[in-house]
Amino acid sequence: MADGDGGRRRTFGPVALVGIAASGFAAVAGHREMLSIPEATLTAAGGLAPTLQERSVEFPLAGASALVALAAWGVLLVTRRLVRRAAAVLALVASVGMLVVVVVGGFVQDGDAAADLAARLGLNAAAVEVDRTAWLWVALACSVVAMLAAGAAVRLVPSWPEMGSRYDAPTAGTTAGGAAATPAASGADPAEQSNLDLWKSLDEGHDPTAE
Image (cartoon, rainbow, N blue to C red; front, side):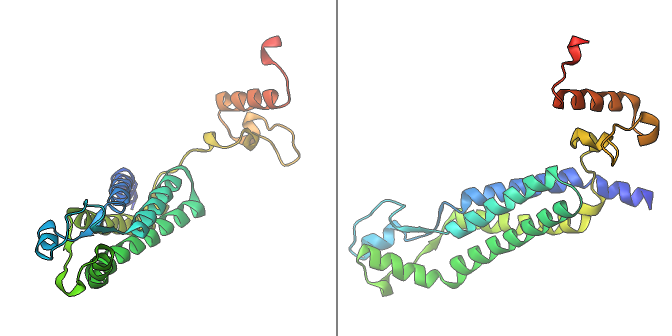
């Protein structure tokens, strides 16, 4: 069992790195051209050849979902317990939403996108088709990877290492009555307890160097 827990703890770095990278690339891809009318199609239809941005559509909702997933990974790295689990769930939900937007927009509603682009350019919609750009495939792949990484995080996060209590507020070394606990009573390391006392003194406005 100990070996299994240790193996799960070692997945923290790789899974987090994959989730952050996939969400980051998906955020970039989500704000790029996903569907585009080929320049040759415009020429054949008798239209001018506008810029790529004018003859393309983006999926900003996919980019926004990727940014949410990326922010959730950032929260997951610096929190503990229930908040950390909630951040993993949020990353998973955002990744699934990102994937749904890319699949629906790029494969289900691509005909609607072609009609909208044709109307924008003053062309016959029946003679216009759109191509899926490389950015759409990047967004699709990154969405799948981000979803898998977030799913793994939801399952494994209880066994992942957390930030130590040394990063908490210095009040952790005080008793319920407000008095500072002794090293023996609190179970804290003497050096750590000394640091807590120093912080408490600074909070109260005392200058330790004056002594």
